[in-house]
Image (cartoon, rainbow, N blue to C red; front, side):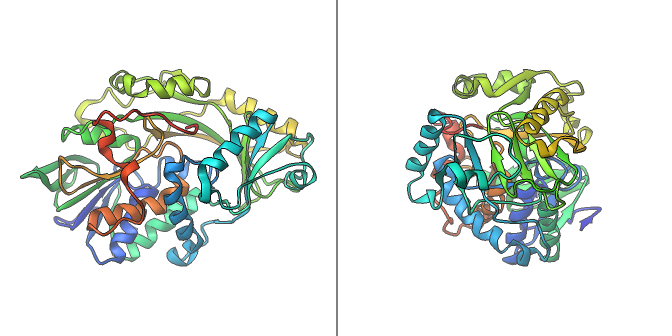
Length: 426
């Protein structure tokens, strides 16, 4: 899939080989443009293969809803599009409620979602119990969306990359982009560790790394990394088929019969230079979400202490999972679902989520630099929405009418005085 050295010229260079960058490459290549994707490490090596694997509309920020509808349409035909089973199954998702306050919170989302709520509804009693086989306790109620889905992150993102390559995109691993060159107020080339690539368009889809690359061309993008820990179990018989979230845990059934398990409420931000640089930007979120994250210091080299060689020296962000949190989370799941007692934990890992101050992405051109498109800051929502985001990025590259209104995703909201406040949790 990957070549060793990039070509000298291309119509478009994409920085970042995750699901967003690869989806963009696939749709651009299918339109006949010459595309190069530069990934500093291995393709799909970071958050695109480390997330929960949820493909959901339910509970999203209303500003994201039109785009996730488009993404769902792409997911529905994904197997045919990429020529592989990516694990997409519409098995439903539940947000479990302990009391009437939880129900009111979710009912408020249904009201705000309006027509985009589709089949999301509150379920209770025997109907809810039937959706939770193996549960040892009853829940008060749940918000349920039968049409929401799951997919396999490692299968899906890699298959999109292979399809992009087949369509003509050139994928180059271990090829860090060091800088973006400009001429007369527009992008003209990228400088990689393996040479210069002349191009008229650049898409920066580098996740948490995007902020540091964009800083080199004078673009201030407030974005911070959030460490999320996950585990997967051995196969389990008789468990629930879909996915669910509650304060104590979240789960998603896997194609192999095991489950992906994560803490439903806690993530960690490892403090670095950007934490102070963007402190004021993130203050509203911190006030609103204070109980949902913790602060720490990375045990290894941080993203801020390696100067100009950063992108080459840190090929892949591979943070250690917070095992104490995972142990507690799995214990809570086992209490709620005794069928997990004695089931082996096969693997645990962590990934770094690219979060913005308002918890919605930037998918945008930049007024101050023609030819640049940014697609980053997906705040933990990027896997499900990724194919739609790639499709939208293509419209921005080509100048076609965007598939959805881009006003809420514009970059300039971070420099024009807009107040940033997430309307759902990160």
